Amino acid sequence: MLHTDALLFYSLALTLHYSTTAQVEWVSNEESCHVGQFACDGRCVPLKWKCDGEPDCTDGSDELSFCARCGSDEFRCQSGRCLPKSYLCDGTADCGINDTEDNSDEDPSICLHKRTCPPNFYSCRHEARCIHLSQFCNGIADCNDHSDEHHKCDDWHNITCHYGVGLTLDGPICYCPSEQVSVGDRCEPEDKCSRPSRGQAPICSQQCRDLGNGVTECDCNENFKPNGSYCSPRKLLIRETKY
Image 1 (cartoon, rainbow, N blue to C red):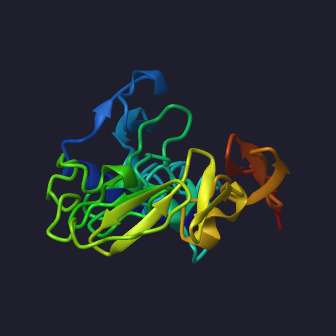
Image 2: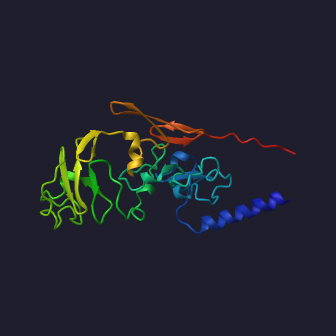
Image 3: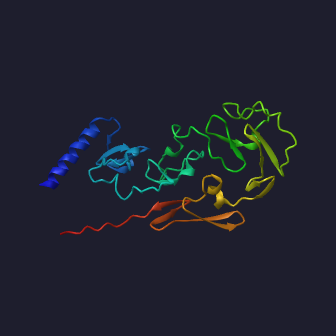
């Protein structure tokens, strides 16, 4: 009786939920859903309902093993994928899974502060955008706020850099050719696996091996499987015990 009552309550909750939104469409299979939706109980519902902590499907398929438990140093996408927080607002939408669009890691409501820019790039002052250091004080406004063409462009003199210098509002910064990073006024080959230690987005979501000559290899922790440079949770088998 308790089980039946629980199902009735669950069905009533779902009915109320679906009756308050116009974002649900009846479909026959997953392929009938649009980008940003998934099939649930014969309906197409918004992808953002998946792994949001509230069950929206009667079979619970939107809140089960698919939903990875993200660590404190990770960001959970609307798609359910866990990404290192350093992937946030890096200019690349990393949250999508299997060609499903999910730009939640580049949401403008989140990306209000300075970006963490890749080597040889720097952030515009009042927008989450990175431009190459060579574009500062070159006479062309590349930032929408014109912060790359500022009043201090003529203040910096006698700057010594091995390759080039970007005259930012925060001071002169040396830059290097592609695949190299600035160490003081010198240029050295970039160790891509050490990007997180420089506050930049990692090239691998969990484990990274530097094989030399600019080649890296990504690997995953236990209970995860490689998916390119990312790691996806392995499906766990749940055995039910009957008493």
